[in-house]
Length: 174
Image 1 (cartoon, rainbow, N blue to C red):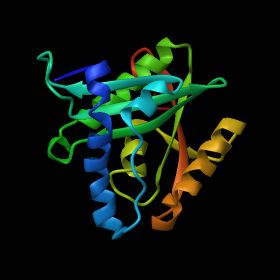
Image 2: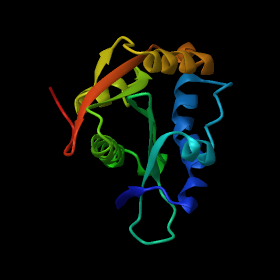
Image 3: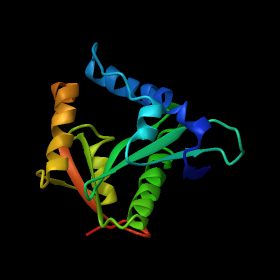
């Protein structure tokens, strides 16, 4: 497996990866109105970067991605998705650590994310990596909370904003 910046070919795969990963939420919550994932084109056009995890062979489709938004002095892990058949193999962790290293390389010292507080593969997972819950501290963080509220994600459980320090080695654990 390798983690690299998304190529034009990879961008077309992102929505399907996220949709497949989201099926676990749909099943867990019995959701009948889950939001449509962003397209790869939308993610690529946003300020920040997209990393993919996949086979080292050129031309092979990725099986996971991390999308980090960078805006107004903030770095926010907007999405991490791994195809269900590739989950629980360390790929999500590897993507988050790579995103943290890339974020630090862009001059940031921390990265935020939004997640479900009581879903085992969400907040508890991120806490093990070094993320801690916080209240919004900036306009950007408040906007991230409002955006997720607008998507209706709060109807399925408690959403929380989390933050972790980042360095060239990855997420810091304080």
